[in-house]
Length: 460
Image (tube, rainbow, N blue to C red; front, side):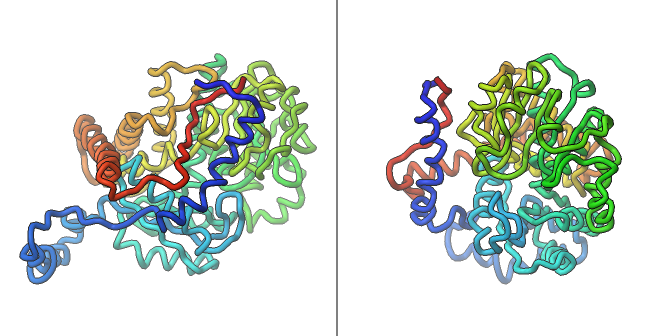
């Protein structure tokens, strides 16, 4: 890996933002629809469209489950958002959210072989939003909720999961939480600590951390050793402001009662002191988290700084303050804790067995599969979680999720491990090969400016 100075690293960190507008303008969108069936001549349309198409239509009318055999429903996801919580940018609206949703669809296809479609909905009322998603759900095999403000994002997820018979997933909650759990488990392996023993500081009580704390506890963390901070300070039973809002936002109040066994009060400094793991998913930095707070952590500290587009502090600052392992949400630093490692493979897995829902247990199995993969490659301080370009990790995660779905009795198809793995691998690898072929044949042009982005560097 190339060694760079801090100044070079700062400039490199800003590069994606500098080229983004010109690249997006060049392609005028990141996805398109292409046929997947043979079209030898116009005569084939008599099968694909009228009159031949009437036959499968009538069969589906008699047996609705045949829609999975005769259409692409089995492999399609709606990426649904109201644009009220886009990345770290806030309520910028559905149109401004569309580039993010297209990017999500691109990742679904490239990393999971899943056909995903942006569905930006101009409706902020949660119940009306739910009705719209339910109304369009017959077209899709799954729903990926994205960039919806809290606390309504929790309500929307819970209600849609109850009322639909297809998987519904909120990636800002479950995806990021699963990636964070995987990073934590991998890092703990490196430093030789157990999840049940460590103290964990959690900065921010947004969608990712609400779900993240839940997954950590289900995976074996002691809730009394978890210290959570929102914008007004540590969560504890004395937070009368949160008790007064417990009907509107029960999630925070529940953590007031379940976590912080030491009854710590104060803010981030008090939450972080004497902990082994720091998980921050709050507001973009740098400067949100101070070096002296990192210095107050226990030996072999693990620090995840997940705010986008800029982490809460620069990773080299955390290292200088004594952290042994540091991860961010960015692809241009080591240990990227990113939901892109999770959601394509999770949906690949549930689609392979036509699972009816996605459970926390499936998410935990996905996290463990990520760690097992990294262990085989060789865990170390700058590799506690697989890289996104390690394509062979995605079929393994898909298999783990599918197996858990079968075990929990939530799968419509009971397939062997070999069948699941081989088909998942085939779907994922085919997407990459198709895109490379389109590039080789110049149907997809090179980006403008001749700039190539890479994460292949370390701090000098």
